[in-house]
Length: 496
Image 1 (cartoon, helix red, strand yellow):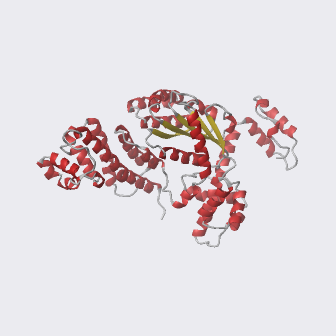
Image 2 (cartoon, one colour):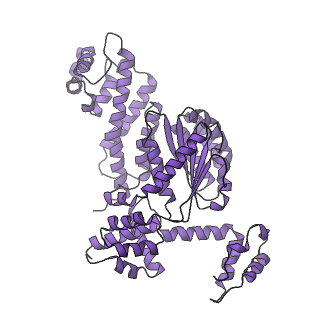
Image 3 (tube, helix red, strand yellow):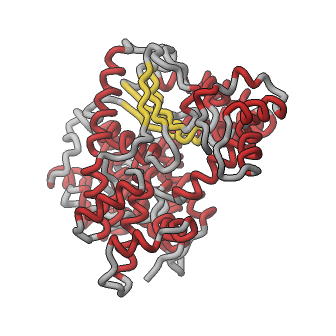
């Protein structure tokens, strides 16, 4: 059975409401109890039977009668066994806590209660994208105001599929992750409290974004007791970058009043809104022990660079910016507080072959090596190939193998079709390699005048040797920009 996007929305929201919300409520209950009673002839709440007995004794006879079912559970003292009904009663309506609860806490907890009740009364296991986002944002805003962690909720919010073991097998490159993480740690130490910047560059499909996600997850999971945060900024456009900063500001505790004002400014002056957001965010980030901001898929570094935390700055606190981009030509070389890793070479041979074998479930070492070489060890192309072969085999063609695959992808259209199978199933690879390359070429043609005229010229030529001087003369004649500063003879061969 295949699940629709609306069904996945419902399942994700149920996980938040029935797994993550109770954990947050337990923490709020313990905070309120300890604030009111710790050290005042009553014990700190440690989930003991005595704690439950103390709570029960503080309830009036009327409360004991009215809330007998909840109190029968609460009496054991172990909050891990309390469901949301018990937790909402204990926080909002009990004599011991509810009567003295601050209006601010009451409002946020009650908002969480309303969201949960709305989910419980949904008659069909479906939820539109808009309703899902609205409900999750309400929970996240309440958690933020209550001082609760929202990282896991944010991960569920951004998740578009349920990862399976098969998809997890695609996420490899452990050596690359370890090497880059070690370089980042050394850079962090040597920056002495200043912002440092890491660049991951490479062609479409080389795995930049996936590696960045893995590195971000590792960064957060190894937090120890440090106060840290990881955030991803959407750099596809200035407007989307401004929206990302608004989201970051909300998660860091900037007031809704201030953010609403900046949302209206953003509509006409997104860059000005971003600069004002920087001024509000700076005091928040400097309070963290460390942080990581991922600027994924930056198209134009010159356009976006000034709108990110600046390399060498100490105003932002001790953190790092991780930038993934195809725009390798504008990455500063050997600059202080920076590290650059090119990923165009693809995966290690052994990891590439292992990925193909594990995901496809076909052990043909020699043939797998041939496929890996053909696909230039590029992770997205490898993942798509392995997943396609696995799909064909499990769909009834049990004799299908890598030799047959190599024959089937002999043309551009066939390879593109094979890659579409993975793109339709995995949020980690939403575009095919071929589509990503096409987009990169289209973008380059639209923005690079030299490249545009070079492609135009080459398209008119036959398959004979092409004199280099002819290309240069043609481009020079067509360009309105100063071509000598853009194109160098060493960038071309004498054949096309």
